[in-house]
Length: 560
Image (cartoon, rainbow, N blue to C red; front, side, top):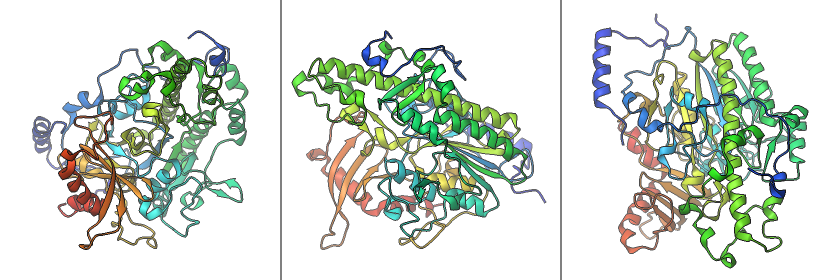
């Protein structure tokens, strides 16, 4: 009997014919130092950067991968052995999808950020550039993704909440793999910090052994650096106290070696702490982003052109002392704000390049150990981030800037040549997708009241899209911006509204707050909610919102 993970080709000639047919048919669907800088940098020699790419900005994945858009006739995949796939889940914190494979899909994203290792992974993955989180805030988003449930089910909207302490005993993504024979381990920030008796422990039922959350000394050391919004670490400082993500990466490399020697398949989740603010990174990464090369696109930073007396800096977080001091003396407010924003963007870019080099170390070790072709690799982030755009800093907004996230999945033998799927996706889709990719028993869709049901899903496996780019798919996705406010994204519109009491006909009603039309306004500059030309469109969107995520999934799952 042939094992279920072996990809079988019954007729080579037929397979070649079908491949040629599909390739021809299915294309992609639609620095000088000054007193301010000294706050953020030290001096010292440089460490060599891992994984530096060449200087040219390559064409985005959306263009270069069009020739690889074939229909995959089966996703029963081939491994280097007869055993099941391992799973490596790589996560980032507060990361916009500023990887070259994603940057052609959002005008605010910078295609020039150096991410050679994630670029290489994307070239062998199914890339989902229109993926959105369920809540643009750390704990709510992570809880939603790792339980496969939406905010209306988890009720988690703040960082201090724990779904288990709320009486919700959901089977998490790693726990599901654990129940099916996997050894599940974690390093770094996977769940948002879950505490027991004041000690951060992660979610213990999810793991086969206690998760490694990093050295407390490292957290405390870098937190003591005067609370700037960013800090470039010298190599001398790095030798004295390693960065948190250096620590997480080194532990991950050791853990991979242990797992390679084991007999069980593994599920290994690694969560790096950056590029979450404050942006703390090795100083050599600044070299790739000269300050005078950092732009502030007018569509997002037009408020800087206002008269000085009209410039409002209240959006800047006060907890970072350098930002808090900008308006303290009332002098040169515009100049200080311009410089601060350019430095923030530069530091963010450097942080992204830094963690890319660490992902490269982890993926290189996976290959060296002979595990790469037996491991499903997924990369994700919990939400996006505003860095001064539209007078915003942070998240928790119903905008593409904060809700859009990177997501790609590499499945050996299936996505080897890379593919881009521009259809709408959500972070709740990761759980059923990885279950599907590992050929574990699929979970049923959750009923309306699923608080007492341990294992069910409120997202959809993305494997049907991987198999066939033209498969029918959901046309809207949902992001909460508070428990009672929902932002619905379609291919063209974002409609954000609050539910009202039903009318006499008992149909759902909503008070619309925001309507963006990306076809004519891709940078979310104008709110069309009160524009009479959109009255009919708003009625349609309200009807779709009233049907909720279940209605969106019904479009697909009743036809497949």
